[in-house]
Image (cartoon, rainbow, N blue to C red; front, side, top):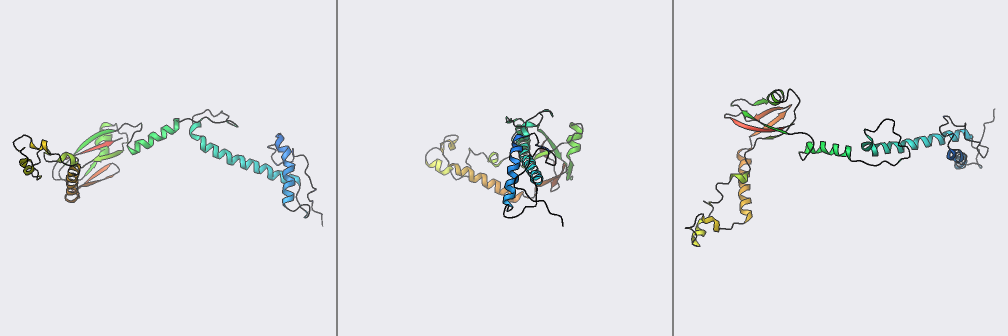
Length: 252
């Protein structure tokens, strides 16, 4: 039975002894490769135990470990610096160089998020309205806007204003205080003959807020059936209208 070669106790020169020779001209690799082989052999039990491996096998593992570690570092650097390097010439060499960060691509991304969130961006928003026809429930916004006004270009409807004006704007003459229970108080102070008498009445802020909440609660209970759905830029109104109303839309 043939004698298996065992570790002799030290390795020979690493140059020309690796499978791919990637680091044959690297002085640090040439110095550390024999040390690595000796370390591995001792970790496997040498000299108490015979290690049936030669230096070339240790060098192959050392070469692979350096390449794998370099790949891991490069992958991390690529991800970390991708936004700063996009648009650079393909012949650029950034090996062992410190990358100066730029905000160009980051700003472009933030504009896209701003467009979707409706708080900025670089996309123009356009506003339009449609008249709801009695007895008709569905309206094709592509036909109404994209084909008619945008030369067939795709549009994206961002918001549909279908509700009435805000509750704060629907006070019934908030300066008259008619029916608010304050006229008797104004008369008691002798201000009833002045016009408008309410100018002498200082009401707390929560009184206005409670009145706004009352209006909004009334809308949510009595008008809750009024709504819409938007699928593939087709607007479906609920319920079917029996009178003409206007819907205002903001589109891209």
